[in-house]
Length: 494
Image (cartoon, rainbow, N blue to C red; front, side, top):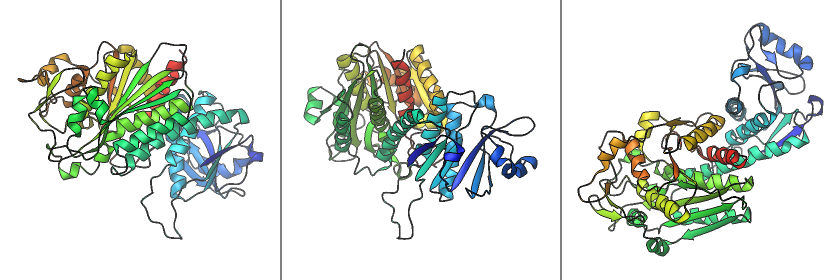
């Protein structure tokens, strides 16, 4: 989709629809634009109170230039922020796609208590994110085609504002890259293909360097957990490292880690059939980390970040790793495998060990679709957040409020470590079957974090929705990309 600008209403090209913004007010909705030319057209719906300016309310009226005009409610002025704007304009895009519109003119709201940067970027992100689709496997007849907006014009924006609009486009592109990876066939998004995509990031900037460990190098690094999970697969594992040095004058360094299970059968602890058809999404954390690095590098943020993605299938074969056996990871700790479907924490453990022991950053953030227990606790809209650092947790929560990648902090409750005790190894890879599964998984990961600020984000719920909604027109949401981008953008200006 192309986004253009027009400095005023008179300079616009005629489109399929025109969107007029209003806020909810005590007596009648208040126009956030020069209303004089539209006063007669909007009078009826306002006087009859069919349109009141409530959040996301849309009323269609008919004009002489644009045949269809949408009166759009933004709700109460004191409730409006960047995420609020994105939510509302995403519903506009969904409506326009349903109506098979190709072009739209959007009058940029005036006199809101929100910065122009947040306003324009919020609208731009909503346009690009909601206009996304994944139809590469659909067959369309000659008379059919996928329905997407082709052009949106922002009326009231200026040439200098194109930088803000392009920023929104870059961020949305990172999210949509992640969505493509998660939506695609697991047979296509293999560990090797993830590594190939990561390598292309070197073309973005001279500040990007990508290193990929093959199976031999993984063995040399003694990543026994990653090798164990990989044993049942016919595809070798990879360990992807993306180094971005955006501020060579600073010693501050962050590591982000993403779970890269490109398909999860559950291993010998086989998943039930109804739980397996979405398991191509089990690399959502790794895909989000790739999307975030794409965005961070394209925005040229002044930060130093290394992304780590341990990637493998968790498949079944004659060599599959077995429940009851003990494996030793990179940190030298032994783990008794009680359930081969608790594989994500194993490969993350090796990645966290590598980050702690070899890179030694200022902070580590990992993302993973880790536990079904997190979905039970928080549903599909909210990701679980764990951290050993109050500051890191608060900074991530602040970023989440801007993006709508909702987080809810859960405790690293130390007494639950007893659930991970093993009679024959340092740890078990799961706790009790039904108790505090999300917390015990986080406590397991914490065992492999060495004296560094760390946060774990369990995205099992919002990574792959049961039904598309809001900003997310497909099952894959790309959660984490905007969260990490805004987190590092804020870090870069401190």
